[in-house]
Image (cartoon, rainbow, N blue to C red; front, side):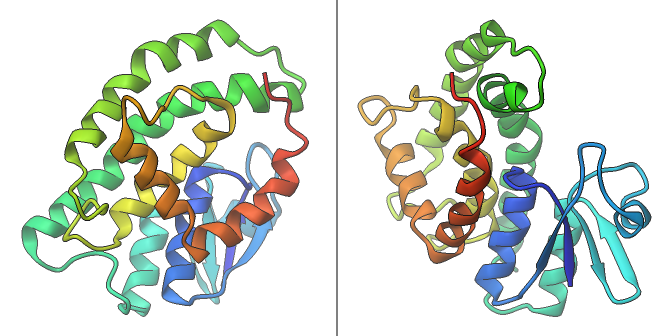
Length: 215
């Protein structure tokens, strides 16, 4: 099985962490952001990453890939089967993909990635998102987190993988998430990042992130 994408994309990280928790080995093939071989273009006709190939089957989009992997390897169960818990898990994944990630990406791109790509960073945009858009998202999650430290069913699920994946990138270039205001969030992110599935990924990502310019 091959996963096409760029480290440290949160969407690539989400799939890799999910696969690692399932014990599924994926070969990461660099692709995306205008690069990628014929296999990537065939799997992702619009250049969206990550893309995935398993024999004669190919698909793109992290949610679609995770759905495929989960169907092949249902254990351990990371997407609850109980109706309300399942719906809430999908909501948190959608929240992470379409609300949390776009906001965090503005910070990450302008403070780290832009310079590495030879583009002029918009630091004012990063500052504005950090000050205005991120705090309400942190407030929402701080209130939503149960005492167990997991978002759904008091256990580790896809919801936790999805929410923490973009926060890894934010954490590399923002110190706005502080324990005095958001103690649950700080502890939660640290606990999820300490899982072997995340530790192994971040060790690989660190080799790339070291080349990025931090503001």
